[in-house]
Image (cartoon, rainbow, N blue to C red; front, side):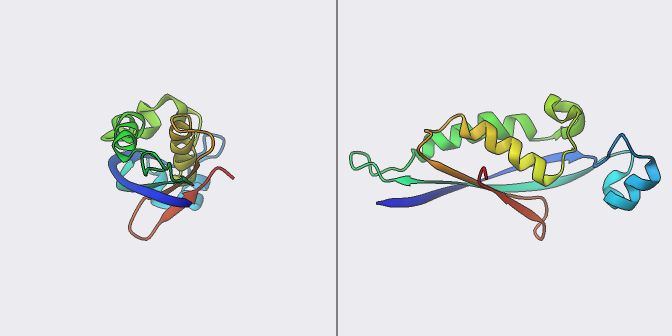
Length: 136
């Protein structure tokens, strides 16, 4: 039998959306207030969902306790109360949009689970703005 388990997580972080190849005016026209010089912050919420066969010996798709520690180590310690542009080296050259953040998160978590399991992450930047990514 195949099922999906999910776990929520949270982090607060600052970022600035900006393309260094453009002038300030074009950045403001494209990214609005998100391009202002002094950054801005969000209280992010994310949901990690793992789909796979239920192990008949454990009854698990994936151990949720183990998932809790993976999310803390790979996501929350890295992002929480950080400036994404300045504190996370991978984003020194990647614009930290929610699309790019969720792809980054997915790649970190996918390395920690079995290849036969499907992974989907939903990342909320605000209550109204969110993105889903499943590796495709």
